[in-house]
Length: 208
Image (tube, rainbow, N blue to C red; front, top):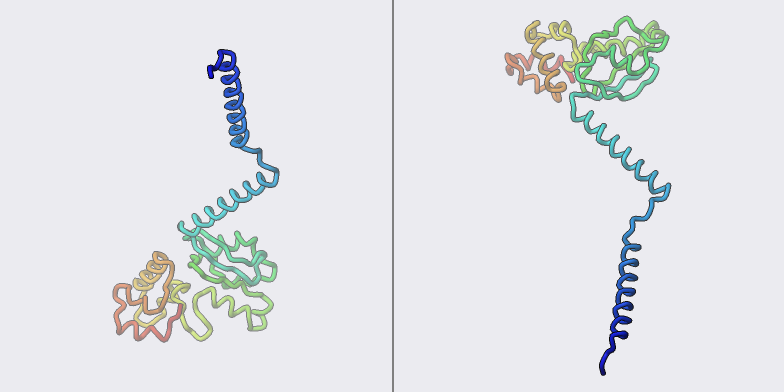
């Protein structure tokens, strides 16, 4: 059977129509659909969450320390502070002291240590000889039983330990600042001139 020219043209037209329909359907299926308001909102929430996590990670991985302050302070909380910050900086970050804060024995210039907890005593309690005096002593690095905390003690307090002079006290402070504090009292032996003999004299008089 012979196909006429007219039939060929009709066939071509039908083929073109079919191809056009296929192309149109394919294009329609693959056109990006507009996001709903809820989807747009969720997208920004996810981005904010990622940004917050990145910021927190950057803080923790940088030269920062984590410290807690409580007691007679306006905003008692755990804070992330720059390494090298002092108690005065932390008090300012926490909104300042309350009117009842015992300020006499607070060393505002003392450098903060990682994972340290600062307790601001109550002046009324100190007058009664209870909690206030304990809070003040904890800030100085020396407990009521005379044990020296080598992570918080001042140079003068370290100098009172047997076998520790000003030079070694300075080395102890330098070591804890460089290494984020002592993890155990045995770590003290890593400091130059602190041998077994010196450590034996110190071990019952120090803490972390």
